[in-house]
Amino acid sequence: MNTRSPRAPAQEFDTTHFRQALSQFATGVTVITTRLADGSFRGLTASSFNSVSLSPPLVLWSLGSVANSMPIFSGNSHYVINVLGADQAELATRFSRRTPNPFDDVEYELSRTGQPILKGASAWFECHNRSRYPEGDHVIFVGEVEQCAFAAQPPLIFHNGKFNTPPA
Image 1: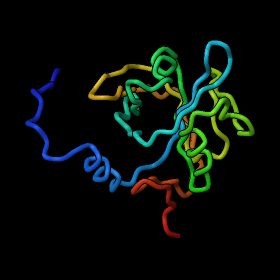
Image 2 (image 1 turned 180 degrees about the vertical axis):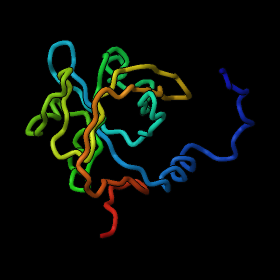
Image 3 (image 1 turned 60 degrees about the vertical axis):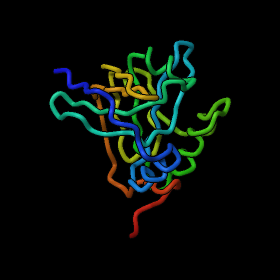
């Protein structure tokens, strides 16, 4: 079913105002990881993660269309979505920056397809790169979950432009 509609009328706000309004929605924080053809790893921080379907098990996340890692994540068959715990803000910051090797001194293990799973994550989802949908200035990635695990713990939350942890 195609449900594409014509564009909405012009907005009465600018992108700064829109971003500030969006920042009022608290989200969890993930690091999406994958292995490159040369065996090295790539990872990025994303808060745009959501479940799509239980059967089949599908999740989604999005990436800016002009991101330098777009060719990598578009072309790879698998990736892992690592859901960060409350004590992993440093990892979120590390993978949100362009650094030569953000995996230096980071503990991880490999999934069955060789993707890095970050140690201490509260959950992880190994996904087959099922489909991609360009929308606006981002691409929505839909992953079919092939394996997942979790260790219940307080989450890392992103709200109003900063990392937070839930009150005890």
